[in-house]
Amino acid sequence: MKKLLTCLIGIILYSSAVAQSSRGSRKFLLRDEGLSQVCFVNLDDSTANWQVKVPPGRDLQLVGKGSVLIGTGNGYQEIDIRSGKTLKEISNYSGSIMARRLKNGNTMLVGLNWENKKGIVLLEVAPDGAKKKVLNFPEYNYVRLVRETPKGTYLITANNVVFESNSNGEIIWKAKLTGPEKIHAWQALRLKKKTVVSTGYGVNFQVLKKDGTPEKIFTGPEHVNPHFFAGFQVLNNGNYLVSNWQGHGVGHGNSGNQLLEFTPNGKLVWSWKQDPAKFSSLQGVLALDGLDPQYLYIEGKNGKLRKQK
Image (cartoon, rainbow, N blue to C red):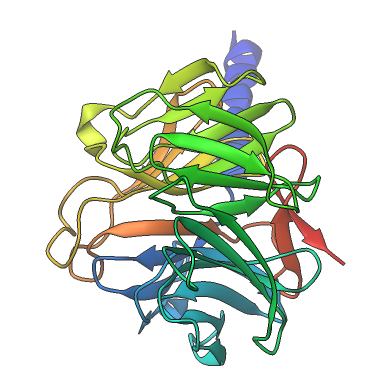
């Protein structure tokens, strides 16, 4: 009996250790739209945390040499992860919505009715800010985030539609999302033969099959106050970590749990309740655990971030 009890205790302790190790130390870069700030949060060491005011804009990406790229309304900034100090800024593209570093080292800026063109505009710029290439989709009147796929195509969210363009600006795949016309879908990632979309006011993840029909749709429980599913990341364990935005401007810090982690089957396994004195409404998240900030990271074939050498 004593041996059995000892064995059971050992199993319990081992299971607990595995659960803890699967979670690991948690470090995040966060984009707080409500307070227009970027924040570094270390849940194990709050003395390392920082918050800096930034221009309004969207997205977060590790781009190497210890810096994070953020899109602004005039182009982009690169910020030092250790201190929050601005290291580089391209600011001559007024009206841009987001920025994303491409595998070729250039940066994709995105705008709407922008650069003297109607509809969605994708503008590729060189490291010095010079224009390199323009793709235009005049039939769409809304855009949020764009992601480069492993094949070099682009996944683009356009309100209640997500579509894929090749490098010549030809639409090669398209799907209509479940929900109202003004769903304001936020981000899409390609996972092998599936596409995962955070749907903004749809307040859910929609997992689409190759033909664009939904395979799975899921949201969070009421106690985390699901409001708007914005920027998300596929973690190393395959789970989806999403920012649960709560509204424009200040005063939303008490509303909801603004980081949610789901299994691919839609089970909520972790959430984070932000400090209302420091945060208002999170719109972007980048989990740093297991990543090396000295490298550029772009999503790979399974949607997980992969460093580019």
